[in-house]
Length: 453
Image 1 (cartoon, rainbow, N blue to C red):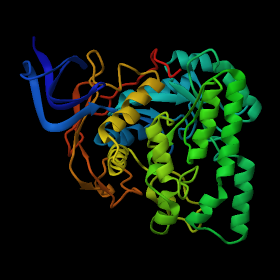
Image 2 (cartoon, helix red, strand yellow):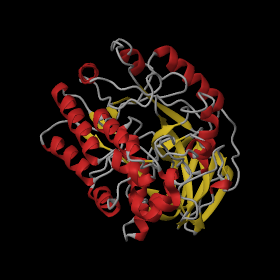
Image 3 (tube, rainbow, N blue to C red):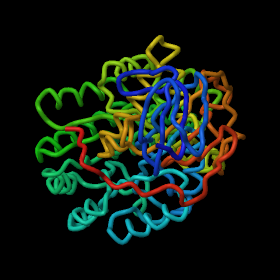
Image 4 (cartoon, rainbow, N blue to C red):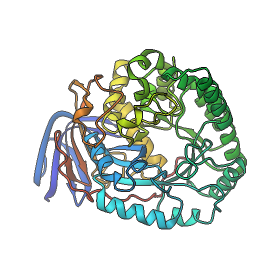
């Protein structure tokens, strides 16, 4: 029996790494897995001892926040170069968020025109909007919804009131669909920013202090309680302290559906160490906190973190060149650094980097967003979304990135692995140097039947 392609190497299967393995692909699916002599195929690739892992699922990206829907093209180019085969894109598009079936249709059309990777989508609800569109968005395949407790923009990134948040939770309560939140208390943050400006403080340390853990924890606790009251799945899309995971664990212990996510920059950067050199290049919201890195790694290893994402932002570097930190844009690129940064950080600390990477970047987001087992694991019948990882040192140079941004807070950092190849749906998308698939080769991915709870 012949196959379209056979890939040889060390396959990281759900039960563990398998040396001298082969993976046979037919019609975009994994058709067979074995060891020893490989079967016949139209194409073959021998990765030697390199690691064959499931394609990464980046559970939090902002592809369209700057360039609108065409931004999907640049973002997904960078994704495949980072071993990411599916992005889960946030709804806060420019100029209008994804809050209706009509906007979902438009974004799906843009995916089919521009995407190099698969794309799953968050939806949202705007201030004062009824919940009438929710059922249609779910029927259209959105994998989750997201709102914010802080208003960055009244049109593109608005604040949703507590009473409306409860209405949304109630509408989702009978489903497996999570409601995610950007978790900062608006009154605390705005008062602190005003005080910092009045005092003439405008550096990266002032940014962190103006959005203190109290603002994050207050918004987190209220959101979790509203989710519990409705019996819905409450998800915190970025927690920056171990205290946040304590709160989530308390609700889980009480029997409620609650989860918390972590972004990779919180596992690497510290404003007291990196702030003087990076300045606004490490500005994200909620801020990166001092002294939290090792505590957060402990949360990852203990299983308290649902999954780790990039929170990739598509803002150009010019957005950071402002006189005051409070005028600089928040967010950093991260698609080509998510995989090597997480793997390297785990390895440095003596963890089982291979297993932890596949668990946090592949399996868990697949299960969370209803994509399992079609994605997230190397198993027969799954989509042939595959990354090949070479255990080889690299110093990250964002000027060689494959998107249009070409800047990063990780510039000059040494990683212990690099992505050697990426396959999307069984088709070579990245050869280790160049993007070789075409815009539109990626697919829109709707939510399937798997559920976190």
